[in-house]
Figure 1 (tube, one colour):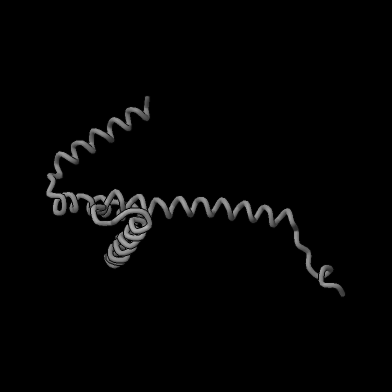
Figure 2 (figure 1 turned 120 degrees about the vertical axis):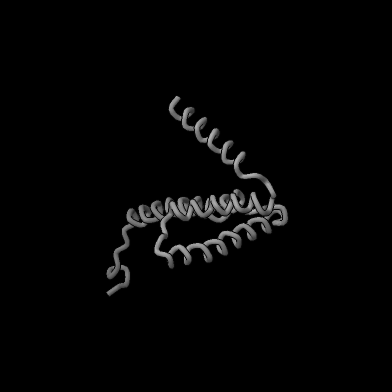
Length: 125
């Protein structure tokens, strides 16, 4: 019995699987960019990270180290959720602003409140 008679490959199915995998790869790439590059740029100090690939690697290391320390602690106290993790990122940013940059937090929170209100009103408009 020839080998090609034993197996049937549906070319249309392979094309559909390929398209679905491409879509998942795009979503995964966007999430990786947000989690491992954009969030660390917004949260952690960037003065000594360098440029180009060095900046990408440092931001990846920052986020992995942060997640490796914060997520097990939140799980240990049985309080892990995505919202609480986002809150810890915001709290970390405020601590970095206070201790690393020596800035006052109250005016920053006031500006943030105004920006959120303006965004919300622009959204309604």
